[in-house]
Image (tube, rainbow, N blue to C red; front, side, top):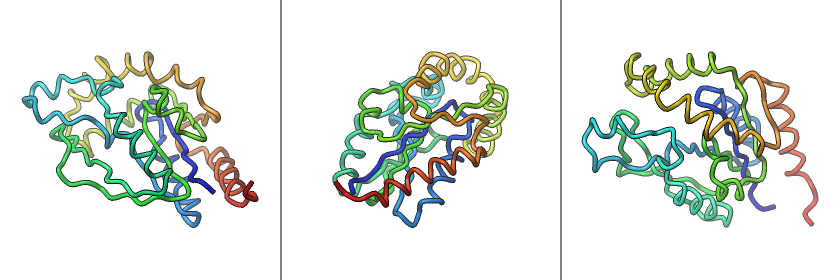
Length: 208
């Protein structure tokens, strides 16, 4: 059967990465790979450090969706890709890449993947992870401080100036495109089990 692309969207800190990893581990025997939209942020090395910090990274224009679409098409055709590697501390794309081989199940995770119709067209199953705003912002603060070298003040400032308004403008409205909405973040095991069961049934369905 041809590869299946599962898209997992939701606000920053919603738990979509946890959902993606849980599904990935449950279907690994079928051949699966996880691709994060965050790796496709546009390189900002041509800007000064201060200019890079002012870029709105929560707007769709900050991401290289053309490259993502091209590489998803290549994976669906059975070809390997060189996924970009992004450095969130310096806001630049590194020179090295991450080689990704084609698999039966491709899991694409990112908060803006449903905002681009070209990406939506390539996704076979769309999942939206729906989580309360308060929990999302707490998770984002913890992640950005621990993993991305940000200060508490910078994370809060970014959330109020761009993350929150961009979520309401570009992310939350895309919930209507979802085939499945998973409430309560990334630990809703019942919903995850249902998705995994569906994927396994597709894998075992007779070819037409």
